[in-house]
Length: 544
Image 1 (cartoon, rainbow, N blue to C red):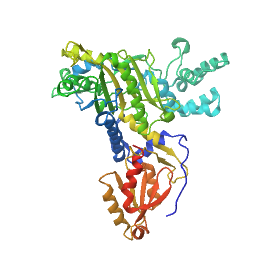
Image 2: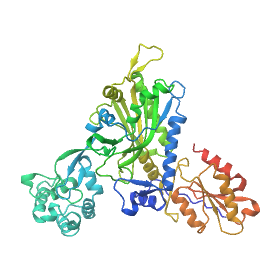
Image 3: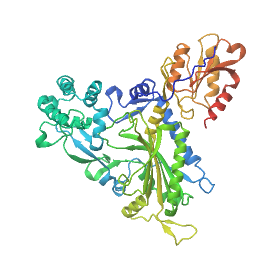
Image 4: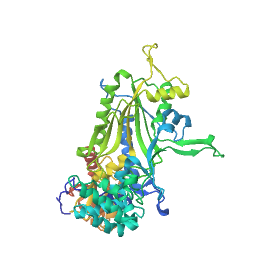
């Protein structure tokens, strides 16, 4: 087969989130949960490729944390042990942790359609996710200026269907008169898009002041109230208030309540860590942005217990380790930042926190949280010691007169969001390919490491391909793909991010060689059939 030396398109071409979501369903990465019944908002199912991708990320995190944890400042490996705690714990756990009393979001209810909207996400929702908000914004942007005639035309056409309760739709002339007065009265400071939307939601400016519209129907929103995010369930048959329990809102509390069990049963000494991967549940009112904000998700959390005097040193240590880990799975460069929480943003028990943030297509040019690295002090152990009545102090094994509650550094990563970041980072637009793109997965997270492709279904090619597949499958996740023409099969492997394709052709039976196609460059080279496994091992190991 001839060599192809075409190179891929530049990495930083714009990425369309709709195309990424469509690819995920088409190729079996992620499906809407209960899809044949119309789905259920905030829940997602991982398909065959998505499951492999998620498991690869999870396993690499577990290896970096538990199986082969990093070398500490003293030159020795740090000690981290694993845990798998129950999703449902005693309800008192969530009282002690503060989740029952304070795990809530500020909400605003629409009196028109009943929709709840997070108060702190209102304008982002209106400008980026609301059907009517984005429709109106597009109309204004296309004209390049604020024109009440354009808004009036929109209100009498699209607005009637998209936002029937919006003031400018119900009473356009009066509502627009207020906006026109504002525009003409202060020509030196034109209104922002937010102020425009407020004017369009306000029927009686003098009596109500500017009002905030509902993202769904446009009606003026009610004031703020709080909404607890813990998902409730009931144990036993009576389903009374006494039987109420909660699905865990985070995996961290399962670690804290098992801290004493692990100290007593395992040969661990401070400093040490406890790591856990598992599902958490939050009753998000407005799940959005694909799997970024969902009601069921997975976390990868590690609680590092250390002496209070060493906490700052360990915080810096874990900051650097987490940076290196994200880079190791292909998430990094200019699309990832470490953002420090300002004093007014810190959770009350945190001494300092940094968020690892990624530039998702739906947040660009801004960033969205991927992981939090928090110095939680001794808050959690203090709370559980107080509420449970169980002593959780650590005794220095060198001096039993020294007892203290360890301080905690918590690197808490979202596994579900990690999958999304890897998908977004890998999605690479390339007009030179039939598929128009390819998934540039780092080989260590790629769901399929190699594809075995017989060129035709004759001349013994499928049999050779089957033998090669059987030889590789014990060590690697490989795909044997026989049907369709070779161009379509290459396009499929590009879309699922397979790093290498090995093609068996008419020359293979005579010279015992195959063609290797490299995903990123589409370059092809010839290698010996009996060297395929060592070739794959050598080329994948370059990325370890």
